[in-house]
Image 1 (cartoon, rainbow, N blue to C red):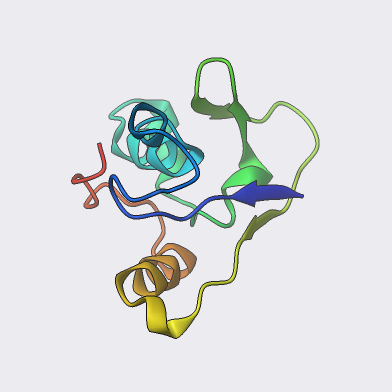
Image 2 (spheres, one colour):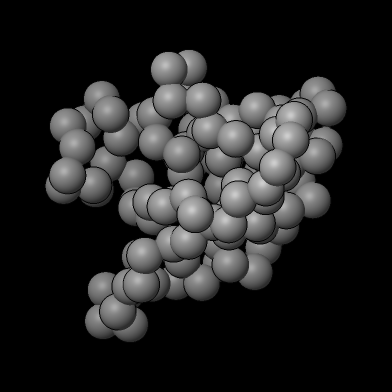
Amino acid sequence: MVRLPVHLPHRYPAFPLDAILDTPLTAYFKASADSGPLGEEARKHTYQEFPQFFVYDQSKRQWKLRQRGAALGRMCSIELTTGELFYLRTLLMVVKGAPSFRFYV
C-alpha cells in the first residue's frame, strides 16, 4: 500500500517549503502534464489508481512506469470542514489525469 499525500499549494505543515514542490502529488501533476508517453499513460488514471501502474522514485522525486507487480494507493481521510483540501481530494479520486491543475507545477 502506498500512502498518497494530499495538500494545497504551499500549505503542507509537515514539510519545509522547498519539499512541498517535490511531493508525490506534485510529481503526479507533472507526469500528467508531460507531453510524452509517460504523460499519455498518466492521463488514463486517477491519483489513487496511480501506484497500480507507476512507482514513485524517491531519489528523483518523480513517477515512472511500473515494470512488475502492483500496489494500492491510499489517500488520507480529510474532513469536510477543511474546505478546499476536501474538494481537492474529491477531485483527485474522480478526475483521470490532471493537466489542468497547472497551478501546482
